[in-house]
Image (cartoon, rainbow, N blue to C red; front, side, top):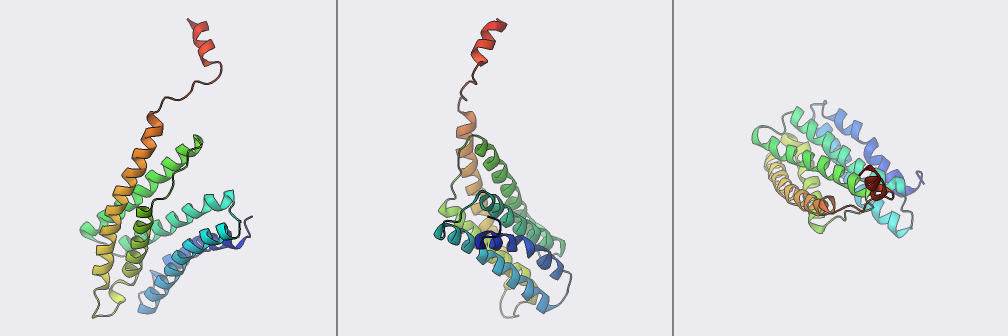
Length: 200
């Protein structure tokens, strides 16, 4: 049910994206901290919606559909804005590219395997990747508006590189598991063998 609390929490992650994006255009410290707070709140809902859905037996097809999409939209929008406002520059763009490409790869892989009725479980390493990535992006959103005595941008950049390394590894791990099913011989559809004999 779309109006259940877990699904509403998921939808809130999508709803907050325009606010986070808009705050990038306000060159003030309060805007950076507000954007970071909204982003952090959205990340927290990522844990709560799944937990509540399982605890309250409210897991739904639409919830399973929206949850990963909300995550990917939030991350993609944030990375694009960070690059667009030069909070990610030079080689620091590379981990952002790796993360975005991995999200596209895993999404396509999940869609293909869903057609084979094969699930792709989330590994603990992937959860660590997500956690480090969320923290790193939070630091980068604040960027130079952070305390002068704390290297906020540096911490965020290092965290993003670590997340990208884990992203690459887990992406390859998912791809390797998917290739096992892709390369497996698919059962012939009914009538295929008979049609082949008739053609001969």
